[in-house]
View 1 (cartoon, rainbow, N blue to C red):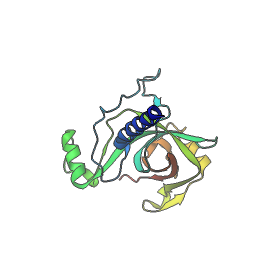
View 2 (view 1 turned 60 degrees about the vertical axis):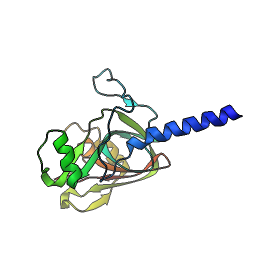
View 3 (view 1 turned 45 degrees about the vertical axis):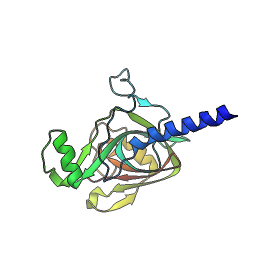
View 4 (view 1 turned 135 degrees about the vertical axis):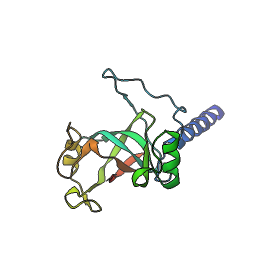
Length: 185
């Protein structure tokens, strides 16, 4: 019994420690990427998703590599990044040897190649930018069309940009409950 309690405590502490580096908010500073090993390249040479990895509750920024919300449970593969503004953006750009002050007052840090496979709620709320009335209007997206947009190999016309746009995800209890497209000038 004591061993079970000790093991559960150790596992809980380890999970919390791993989870702490995965939260991204607009005011986050870039975190070192040496804390957890990244999976090796896939046979195609690109990083492969780390199965079963998830993010803590909250909002996270990144690039969705693929999404399958037609089957249950729905899943997506996310390349986590950090969307920085103001002084944090300028400091990160300087550290990376890029132009400062940063153009348009934002800078994206995406140093870690690790991909995360996430569970998506069957009731996920998807808000996309209305590119036809650019750029501060959002509309609720059709999940099927949203998923189909990730199969496109070229930048598409219209409102469904798929992997060509970055997104903010809201995670609750380990499940993606909302997806919101991020406008980049």
